[in-house]
Length: 196
Image (cartoon, rainbow, N blue to C red; front, side, top):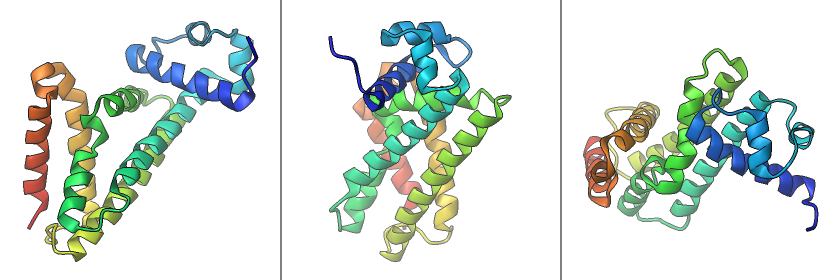
Protein backbone atom coordinates (compact mmCIF):
# COMPACT_ATOMS: atom_id res chain seq x y z
CA UNK A 1 0.00 0.00 0.00
CA UNK A 2 1.41 3.40 -0.99
CA UNK A 3 2.11 5.98 1.68
CA UNK A 4 -0.17 9.00 1.75
CA UNK A 5 1.31 12.35 0.91
CA UNK A 6 1.34 14.84 3.79
CA UNK A 7 -1.69 16.90 2.66
CA UNK A 8 -3.76 13.75 2.12
CA UNK A 9 -2.73 12.35 5.49
CA UNK A 10 -3.59 15.64 7.18
CA UNK A 11 -7.07 15.60 5.58
CA UNK A 12 -7.56 11.98 6.61
CA UNK A 13 -6.60 12.80 10.20
CA UNK A 14 -9.05 15.71 10.24
CA UNK A 15 -11.85 13.50 8.88
CA UNK A 16 -11.18 10.81 11.49
CA UNK A 17 -10.96 13.45 14.21
CA UNK A 18 -14.30 14.94 13.14
CA UNK A 19 -16.02 11.60 13.67
CA UNK A 20 -14.39 10.82 17.00
CA UNK A 21 -14.71 14.31 18.46
CA UNK A 22 -18.35 14.51 17.37
CA UNK A 23 -19.06 11.16 18.99
CA UNK A 24 -16.93 11.35 22.15
CA UNK A 25 -16.05 14.99 22.64
CA UNK A 26 -12.65 16.60 23.03
CA UNK A 27 -11.79 15.22 26.46
CA UNK A 28 -13.33 11.83 25.68
CA UNK A 29 -10.99 11.25 22.74
CA UNK A 30 -7.31 10.39 23.17
CA UNK A 31 -4.51 10.87 20.67
CA UNK A 32 -3.95 7.10 20.79
CA UNK A 33 -7.57 6.56 19.69
CA UNK A 34 -7.25 9.18 16.96
CA UNK A 35 -4.06 7.60 15.64
CA UNK A 36 -5.50 4.06 15.77
CA UNK A 37 -8.70 5.11 13.98
CA UNK A 38 -6.58 6.71 11.25
CA UNK A 39 -4.31 3.67 11.00
CA UNK A 40 -1.19 5.58 12.01
CA UNK A 41 1.04 5.84 15.06
CA UNK A 42 0.90 8.71 17.53
CA UNK A 43 4.26 10.08 16.29
CA UNK A 44 2.73 10.36 12.80
CA UNK A 45 -0.26 12.20 14.29
CA UNK A 46 2.10 14.59 16.08
CA UNK A 47 4.08 15.14 12.89
CA UNK A 48 0.95 16.76 11.43
CA UNK A 49 -0.49 18.38 14.57
CA UNK A 50 1.68 19.36 17.52
CA UNK A 51 -1.08 18.54 20.03
CA UNK A 52 -4.64 17.31 20.32
CA UNK A 53 -5.68 20.91 21.01
CA UNK A 54 -4.07 22.12 17.77
CA UNK A 55 -5.79 19.29 15.88
CA UNK A 56 -9.13 20.27 17.41
CA UNK A 57 -8.62 23.97 16.61
CA UNK A 58 -7.63 23.11 13.04
CA UNK A 59 -10.72 20.93 12.75
CA UNK A 60 -12.97 23.79 13.91
CA UNK A 61 -11.42 26.05 11.27
CA UNK A 62 -11.83 23.40 8.55
CA UNK A 63 -15.39 22.54 9.57
CA UNK A 64 -16.37 26.20 9.65
CA UNK A 65 -14.89 26.83 6.22
CA UNK A 66 -16.68 23.75 4.82
CA UNK A 67 -20.04 24.94 6.17
CA UNK A 68 -19.75 28.40 4.62
CA UNK A 69 -18.39 27.07 1.31
CA UNK A 70 -21.28 24.59 1.01
CA UNK A 71 -23.80 27.34 1.72
CA UNK A 72 -22.18 29.66 -0.85
CA UNK A 73 -22.14 26.88 -3.44
CA UNK A 74 -25.88 26.31 -3.00
CA UNK A 75 -26.51 30.04 -3.51
CA UNK A 76 -24.28 30.44 -6.57
CA UNK A 77 -26.25 31.45 -9.64
CA UNK A 78 -29.51 32.19 -7.79
CA UNK A 79 -30.59 35.73 -8.68
CA UNK A 80 -34.25 35.71 -7.65
CA UNK A 81 -34.36 37.17 -4.09
CA UNK A 82 -37.24 34.98 -2.85
CA UNK A 83 -35.55 31.83 -4.15
CA UNK A 84 -32.26 32.99 -2.66
CA UNK A 85 -33.89 33.41 0.77
CA UNK A 86 -35.49 29.94 0.56
CA UNK A 87 -32.15 28.45 -0.45
CA UNK A 88 -30.37 30.30 2.35
CA UNK A 89 -32.80 28.90 4.91
CA UNK A 90 -32.80 25.44 3.33
CA UNK A 91 -29.00 25.46 3.33
CA UNK A 92 -28.79 25.71 7.11
CA UNK A 93 -26.12 23.10 7.87
CA UNK A 94 -27.75 22.16 11.17
CA UNK A 95 -30.73 20.76 9.22
CA UNK A 96 -28.76 18.31 7.03
CA UNK A 97 -27.11 15.02 8.00
CA UNK A 98 -23.57 16.01 6.97
CA UNK A 99 -24.02 19.47 8.49
CA UNK A 100 -25.30 18.04 11.78
CA UNK A 101 -22.26 15.79 12.00
CA UNK A 102 -19.99 18.72 11.26
CA UNK A 103 -21.76 20.95 13.74
CA UNK A 104 -21.54 18.34 16.49
CA UNK A 105 -17.82 19.14 16.45
CA UNK A 106 -18.63 22.84 16.94
CA UNK A 107 -21.15 22.02 19.69
CA UNK A 108 -18.59 19.85 21.46
CA UNK A 109 -16.07 22.66 21.14
CA UNK A 110 -18.44 25.10 22.81
CA UNK A 111 -18.13 23.13 26.03
CA UNK A 112 -14.34 23.53 26.04
CA UNK A 113 -14.30 27.03 27.50
CA UNK A 114 -11.13 26.47 29.50
CA UNK A 115 -9.27 25.80 26.25
CA UNK A 116 -8.56 29.38 25.15
CA UNK A 117 -7.33 28.40 21.68
CA UNK A 118 -10.51 26.41 21.08
CA UNK A 119 -12.65 29.36 22.19
CA UNK A 120 -10.75 31.66 19.81
CA UNK A 121 -11.26 29.18 16.94
CA UNK A 122 -15.01 29.06 17.62
CA UNK A 123 -15.20 32.85 17.77
CA UNK A 124 -13.36 33.16 14.45
CA UNK A 125 -15.80 30.70 12.88
CA UNK A 126 -18.83 32.53 14.28
CA UNK A 127 -17.51 35.88 13.03
CA UNK A 128 -16.96 34.45 9.51
CA UNK A 129 -20.39 32.80 9.55
CA UNK A 130 -22.00 36.02 10.78
CA UNK A 131 -20.25 38.06 8.08
CA UNK A 132 -21.50 35.65 5.40
CA UNK A 133 -25.10 35.61 6.67
CA UNK A 134 -25.25 39.37 7.29
CA UNK A 135 -24.01 40.00 3.74
CA UNK A 136 -26.67 37.70 2.31
CA UNK A 137 -29.42 39.22 4.45
CA UNK A 138 -28.35 42.77 3.60
CA UNK A 139 -28.70 41.98 -0.09
CA UNK A 140 -32.12 40.45 0.54
CA UNK A 141 -33.16 43.52 2.54
CA UNK A 142 -32.14 45.74 -0.39
CA UNK A 143 -34.26 43.53 -2.66
CA UNK A 144 -37.25 44.04 -0.34
CA UNK A 145 -37.57 40.36 0.61
CA UNK A 146 -36.23 40.50 4.18
CA UNK A 147 -37.58 42.86 6.81
CA UNK A 148 -35.52 45.98 7.38
CA UNK A 149 -36.80 47.04 10.79
CA UNK A 150 -33.81 45.13 12.18
CA UNK A 151 -30.25 45.29 10.89
CA UNK A 152 -28.93 42.47 8.75
CA UNK A 153 -26.28 41.98 11.44
CA UNK A 154 -28.92 41.45 14.15
CA UNK A 155 -30.91 39.06 11.95
CA UNK A 156 -27.74 37.11 11.15
CA UNK A 157 -27.06 36.60 14.87
CA UNK A 158 -30.67 35.50 15.30
CA UNK A 159 -30.23 32.87 12.58
CA UNK A 160 -26.99 31.64 14.15
CA UNK A 161 -28.59 31.42 17.60
CA UNK A 162 -31.59 29.51 16.25
CA UNK A 163 -29.40 27.16 14.20
CA UNK A 164 -27.21 26.35 17.19
CA UNK A 165 -30.23 25.66 19.36
CA UNK A 166 -31.89 23.61 16.62
CA UNK A 167 -28.73 21.63 16.01
CA UNK A 168 -28.19 20.88 19.68
CA UNK A 169 -31.76 20.13 20.79
CA UNK A 170 -33.44 18.56 17.76
CA UNK A 171 -31.41 15.31 17.79
CA UNK A 172 -32.53 14.83 21.40
CA UNK A 173 -36.18 15.08 20.32
CA UNK A 174 -35.94 12.05 18.02
CA UNK A 175 -36.32 11.23 14.37
CA UNK A 176 -39.70 12.94 13.88
CA UNK A 177 -38.17 16.32 14.76
CA UNK A 178 -35.31 15.66 12.33
CA UNK A 179 -37.60 14.56 9.49
CA UNK A 180 -38.13 16.64 6.37
CA UNK A 181 -41.49 17.68 7.86
CA UNK A 182 -39.80 18.99 11.03
CA UNK A 183 -37.10 20.68 8.99
CA UNK A 184 -39.72 22.28 6.74
CA UNK A 185 -41.59 23.64 9.73
CA UNK A 186 -38.40 25.19 11.06
CA UNK A 187 -37.69 26.83 7.71
CA UNK A 188 -41.23 28.24 7.48
CA UNK A 189 -40.96 29.77 10.96
CA UNK A 190 -37.60 31.33 10.09
CA UNK A 191 -39.00 32.69 6.83
CA UNK A 192 -41.91 34.26 8.74
CA UNK A 193 -39.47 35.85 11.18
CA UNK A 194 -37.34 37.31 8.40
CA UNK A 195 -39.74 38.36 5.69
CA UNK A 196 -41.64 41.56 5.18
